[in-house]
Structure formats: C-alpha cells, structure tokens
Amino acid sequence: MEIRGNIALASKVCLVVTLLLVGLTFFGCTVRSSPQGGSGGVVANGVLFLCPALKQTTGGFGCAAPQTEGKLIAVNTSDGSRRWETPLKPSTPPGGGYGCAPAPIPAAIYGNPAILGDLVYVGGYNGKIYAVNSSSGALRWVYPRDDNLRPIIGGVLTAQGKVYFGCSDGKVYALDAATGDKQWEFPTGDKIWSTPVIQGNTLYIGSFDKKLYALNASDGTKKWAFPTEGAIISTPLVYDNTVYIGSFDRHFYAVDAVTGKPKWPQPFETGSWFWAKPVVYNNIVYAPCLDGKVYALDAKTGAQVVEPFDLGSPISSSPVLVSNKVIVATESGVVYAVDTDNNKREEMTRLKTQQGKEETVHAPLSASDGAVYIYTQEQNLYALSAESGTTLWGPVSIK
Picture 1 (tube, one colour):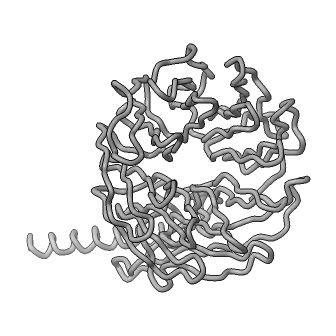
Picture 2 (cartoon, rainbow, N blue to C red; picture 1 turned 30 degrees about the horizontal axis):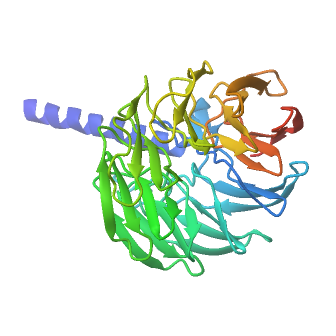
C-alpha cells in the first residue's frame, strides 16, 4: 500500500510539473529576462543604419512574452524618416525536453553595424552575422547558414575585404565580406564581447580571459597577448603606434602596438570598470568610465591632464569626437561636450521622451557632418548639433 501511495504521489507531482511547463510555454511566459540589444548607428551617404532594441510584450495571463525578431533599419540623416527595414530572424536551438519546442534565440543586436561597399553587416545575440544591401535592404547572406554560433555581443569590423568579429564562444572570426565564407578563426580563453579594431595588418581585440590580443589580420595567427587582471569589454583605441584599452580590473593601459609591451610606467587606476571606447585628440586620451567620470590622460605618460570630468551617471555609451569636441552621453540621458582646446565641459541637453521621462543611453554614439546621433533604450533616435547642442530632430521612434 505504501509503495502504491508513493507511486501515485510521484505521478501527481510529475503531472503538475508537466502542466506547469506546458502552461509556461503555451501562454508565452518567461522565467528570465530576455536580451534587448539596441545598437548605435553607422552613417554612409546620408543614411544612418542601426538596429532597434527589442521589447517585451504582454502574453497570456499578463506574462511577459519577449520579442525575438530583430531589425536592421535605414533612416535619412536629414530628418530621421525611414527608408527601409529588414527583419532579422531569431535562431532555433536544438529540441528541448518533454517534447517541447525550444525557445527561439532572439536576434537582439548590441554592436554597431559596419559598412563595406554596398553591404551593411551586423552580428546578433542569436549567433548570426547578416549582410544586407545598403540601398534596398535585401538580405545578401547569413553566417552560419544552417546553424548558429554563441551570442555575438560586440560590433563587427570590415576591412581588407573581410568581416571580423568576436563571439561568446571565445573565438575571433574572419569572413569573406562578399560571400560570408569563413576565412579563419582564432580561439581565446573565454568569451568575447569586445569589438575589434585594425591598424595596418594587425587586428586588436579584448577577451573575458583578461587579455588584449594582436592578431595577423590575414590569417588569424597571434602576434602577442597582453595580460590584465580583469575582463576586457571595451573596444581598443589605436593611436601613434599605441593601443589604449580599459579593463574590468579598474585600470586603463597603454600598450606598444608592435611588441605588446606596456608603454606607461604603470596603468592608470580608477574607481570602476571601463566599458566605452576611449577617444583621443591632440595627444590627450579621453577615457569614459562606469564611475561616471571621463578621464583626460596624457597619451605619452598616462598622467592626468586635468581633474576628471564628473558627469554624475555611469558611461557605457562610447563617445564621438566632432571637430575639437568630445561628445559624451551618460546612462541617465544627459549629453555633454568636452572642449579639447580648454578641457572645459558643457551640458548640451537632457534627453527626454515626449512624455517627459528621462531617456536611457547604452548604445554607442555616431556622428557625421557635424551632427551626433543618439539611440536610446526607450527606442528613440535623436540628432544633435555638435557645435551648438541644439536638437536638429527627434525624438523619432525607431522600433
């Protein structure tokens, strides 16, 4: 009797668990947050290309149903009007348990697109690289064609007829830009969220394995690896034969671009992590940090030129340099200009939705012809004058 009772109880428990799983699947519920994405933009011939953030919609019984299909959108830089949009389909992982179909992997895009010739390239959280015609929005090719990689968080780089990117599988990839065929891959020791940069025939990229790598851009062979004490998420800056990079060890480094040896007596130490890419002007490196400060450092010595610019909110969005001004947006949606002639900062604007809510900025900024373009997590796009700080147009809803 006791055995029968245990069997009956176990059967009821299994039935409840199965019904719960079916219910969660059927009614579109989610038990964890879904990737959102939201890229910065790249400008070519009066057109801005970007990928909007994904949003959660309401499913059955008030459950959150995450959006899974992404988009690549082309807008006119003159007024933000839309030219075309191309859907980016989610990936389908292998089958799950209980005979249920696995949840699709969202095509959320975090890294900026890149352009080469008549194609625009983006990499997605769903482990796909897309090549799209810049004039029509027609999809040219997808890599991988039949499967998918691990999530791609960083942006892609186009150079020398190739598309370069890092992946969460810990590898750096190079694809033929025209066909999408893989040219080479290089394994690091951990996942990669950094966007690569290239100088000459050398590719530079950081990894979660706490190293900055220099690779031969032609064949992917390693030239050197520079160790730090923390993961490297930021995109490197190459200037005057030096690679500048911030790490999650709260230090900012200057590394000889040829030898991989440190160039400063010691790295510059701050109060938090580096996420955004630095910029440089007139031998001064401006390094934004998640502690809400922008550090102005002598490119040769690493010494502070002036006191840090305290902007009062974390900076994860990479700034842009327009003429002699460094334009920076904080996560709280306040935009500043740092005049490099006198190293004085000025508040340009506070981004707010039409309902008066503060905007949130994570995506890298982009600039062209004196205008700065800012995309927010609330799915709004703004164009500002870098000279005056006035709003040229926006907010324009980009969904």
